[in-house]
Length: 386
Image (cartoon, rainbow, N blue to C red):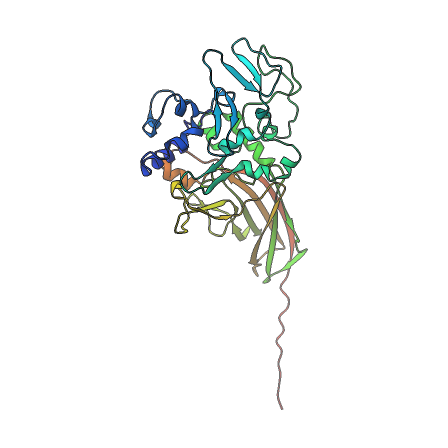
């Protein structure tokens, strides 16, 4: 969030969008990537390459939000007051020598996240991102588990974090972490935040499990076999993956080998893309003619497909191949569930080759061993007529 303006991928896309729309999209983008820049500094698209410091989403932004007027497109109400600055937060007994404090129920709920984590196309109302809606429709909402309960902790599964929010603060049973951990380890690495990058990987590794199902005990040389893999969203309170649909992708890298020979492969990264027929979980956006939109998000007119896995949901993918006659005694199956926040091809297109390396995170794995039986003896049936 602190780097939301300095993000080089955002900057490159913003420049393209600003030019293509003659600046019509500028405030739409800046409202979430630099709220202070838009409201107080009166930024325009021309400021994207400015050398002056332009803040991203800072402490002042969230702690000055007093209300929301909707659940998307920066529908927040900022209430700064230079004469009597008051910071809003989730504690009724907070005190500070530097500013006034006030309790805000909004800061305890996921709705405060909605305004920037639901994105609707400003020209045609196509739903671009729906992270908040995905949570709202989930069992997490039903159970009262808020966005803050997962993304403002020191790590996945850490529900208690005793301590102080500030040096002069009160001792509390739980202090909310302001790392706001998500899954974008690539940008953390780019900005040199190694600990945050590893925390992002930990979040991803806690989000899913994968297993082989309905496996045959044996297969026979020459036979066609089908292997099924079940992927379950066990830890994300939204779809897996969520956010930035042009980039986010989870996929299964599946390999079947025998005696060091590759029998079958699906899910390899080739030329910065996952290969054709990869079993992946993502959103495909389209333009008015139904063509897939990869970069020019301002041209989006519709959602073409969505294969992502809902919270606590699962998907089953299958692979069909022939067991070769020269296979060994066993068939070894290995599946890896991978994630990247954007493809290497997209980054190379935006920034140039070699400018930024995408971090592919291994979320979880599954393996199995199947016995291979020899091919059945072929018999020739000879018939005669009299």
